Image (cartoon, rainbow, N blue to C red):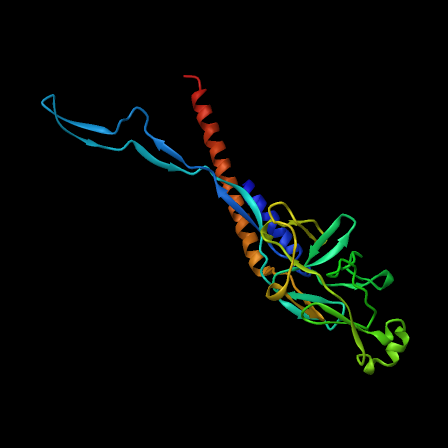
Length: 278
């Protein structure tokens, strides 16, 4: 019953985040307790065949009754990092990663990692998350952009029009010619970890490394995920599958509950019979 409760918690969290950008679903993994080998007591397994009070032969009848399972326990909550579906938003501040990797953001607690590319413009023209955390570039500094004046290519390079960087009003008036003179203003820092399965969720769609996951390593070359501007990665949660598993968990929990109730009733009946006056 405790194991099913852990499964229920993981499934409920998945369903609650089915619409969260970049969310990765969790699976509660269980392991069995060691099985018990049941044997008949005071039984060496040898059966004698007497004839006229004299033994004439014997056979070996193993005293083993069989194995008894002792239940399961939760081993870990395993995160499935498979790619989520990508949907188009046509918002230049929305970025999606196609492949393994994470954006790097600067928080008051240090660098954190996310797949949620729903960014916006913050104070001092910084590219920030919905919580206001700056998105970092490869040089370790925040990415600076301006409304309607930047593009991001698939490699994560950020370009802007130098002529209109300090004049947004002029940019709006001359939008059709804004890309005549472009300059690179930064490159998004994209990282991956040796063992992503051991990353720790910290809320707000942020991840942090652990000793088991290893430190974040810059994604370079062919290991670098593609950046899609104007797209967002949906959660890799299938609500239909999660609801089916939710029903399965509830039924398994109820079945185990009935077993416990039956055992209690049998024990109560046994005690009542033993204690009945003769």
